[in-house]
Image (cartoon, rainbow, N blue to C red; front, side):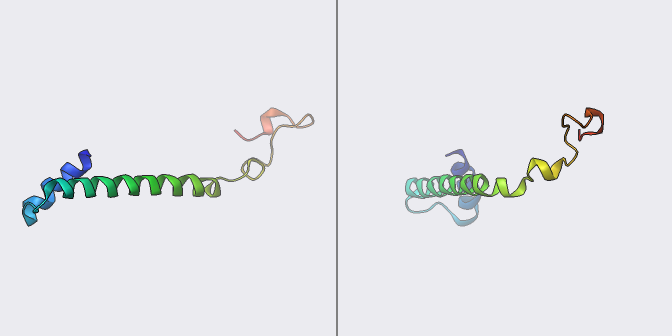
Length: 73
C-alpha cells in the first residue's frame, strides 16, 4: 500500500487528484501486489534454469580416489 501512496503523490501532482482517490489507491495497490506475485512465480520457475548442475560446476569433485586439494572450491 505504501507504493500506492508514493505513486499517488507523483501522479496526482502531475495530473491532479482523481474523482475517486480511494478507488485509485486500491487499484494501484492491487496491481502492484499482483505484479509482485507474478514476478515471484517467474523467479521460482526460472531460477533453476540459471543454476548449473553440480557436476558441470565442479567436474573435479573429491572422490575416494581424488584428493580434496584438487577439487573445486
